[in-house]
Image 1: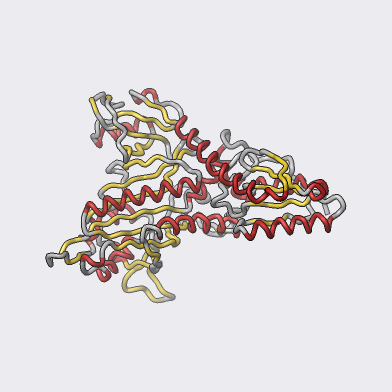
Image 2: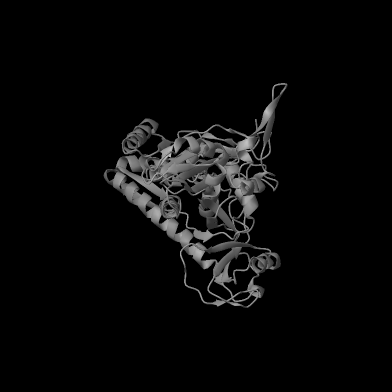
Length: 477
């Protein structure tokens, strides 16, 4: 047999010079998913990647459950006749849906489709669940797989044909109630972004880019290392567009029947892709402690005294587990350099190196993944040190990403100033034809206008008309 390859001095291709190569290499090397499934755009979640997704789901559940949402699970298949009830929705998805037309050798009387999202599956049932004002607000969510026939080049987590999806759906008696829900969803997104250390811009999409069937849509856009943006989440105000199509009505206190007002809030597994892209470096992944699949790895450095060192490591592991910290021991036969490489590649927030000296002195060597900081910590102070390290990592990783986002936003007065791949901010007259001309000339997407008004006075970057409307635009992933 040949000699095993020593990976201790290898690094991934550089993140900012060749992002696509770096990203693909990191995802594969760290074992977040297996891309060898024989259907393009449908990958296998590995245990490590799925634990990360489950941790994100768990944080999401805490936040939405705290706002009186209830979790449900709707069937995967949607009848064609229900899908076709909302015309704008059909137009937005008809080229992306997967159809089921046969069961065995029998042709189905009514073709079925795999859900691309669940409005058309849920809303015929909402008509049965909502009868009076006492049934409102209705606030539910589910975490399921959805299917869309992606025609562009697929990329793990970021652009898939089958992907894990969180979707919340609500019904309200009034438009004001639905608007309050939009604000609540944005508050949930802000809290979640702190857990993920992932700052973003909340932007109201243009009419030609809003979610099919929505009155308006708000996108949460984060900056990628390429200078392009990636949409993390979508929050949509439907007003009565869907409730009229699906006849979802309630009887108010005066006995009058009215259509409900509806909203949705959706996030996909591309959150994982964004975490990889925003925080990773040339050594591998870097995970925020709040959502890391593994928070601490203990590495025994054994040159004699194996039993004594392992007993010390096991005692520390058990004390951390009692605090609910996800921890393991790398007791493989690999050399220390290879073990360090593995821990760095997998983005484990804290590494504890323990050899004979640490055992004798009742200390550990604590290494922070994000900064590489290494320090000696007394055994008696270890639990407090790890807790404070986690807190510092959460704060500093968010601040670093926020600074990166803000430093890549450039104010412009004319589209001729657009040259680099970054986020640009400038005036827009508000006319659709002018906006689409901006997109055509710049080869960038108008991400939208700020949900929270920024107070702008200037001229349109294209037609030079005076305007108080500001837009953000960039290339997107």
